[in-house]
Image (cartoon, rainbow, N blue to C red; front, side):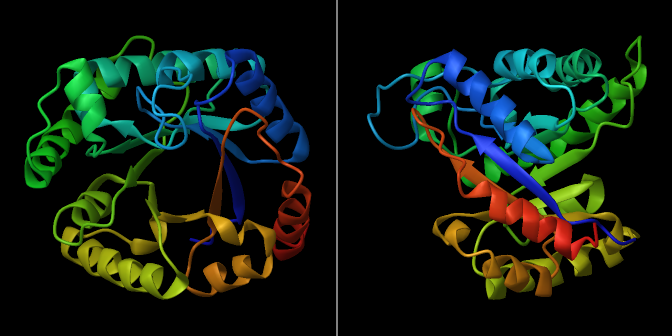
Length: 261
């Protein structure tokens, strides 16, 4: 399977009004993004720690109404914060609101302040990874039981680079794997993921490879380095209150050229 190059924009739901975040989602769509993401936290991850912040899935339901073309989703939901049957139901509902454009991104969770402030047990990394392992089949089962069903098979994005658990879960369940790091690191993670796919009886080409881009977004040639190691879904995080997307036009042009558009 050959995956087209795609551009994702994560509108980080912090340090801005909701209306500005909605406008940023609309601007990302207008400039040519393929996917608009947010994240699932309760407090800002950087900047003023008690600054403005909004909840993930209720915001995505609004983005689903406001936009018309882009896919939308969380990058990523924290598995610890919601019952997995509820996650499936909320995902299905947003999928219908959007007309079949929802991506369900999920991970094991890591931001300890969220857990402490909202009354979740933080535990240890293996505990959270084990909980995600238990949740994913429940989510998949519930998606198959809901009436009405989702408008499509909702793509499942799994984020996390742990080589013994997270990448195996991606091999077993994911349509998209999301990771961070330089091209060499990503190449190694892809190799581990491919190995787990072989053990799980999965064609590794079925899994789209997503890579987060940080300071390198000013250099579109970095995209070629990511393509060379198999990352075809390039994602960028942008922070409030300004949500500057002036850099995006060059990346959209690069994407279209590489896709032969």
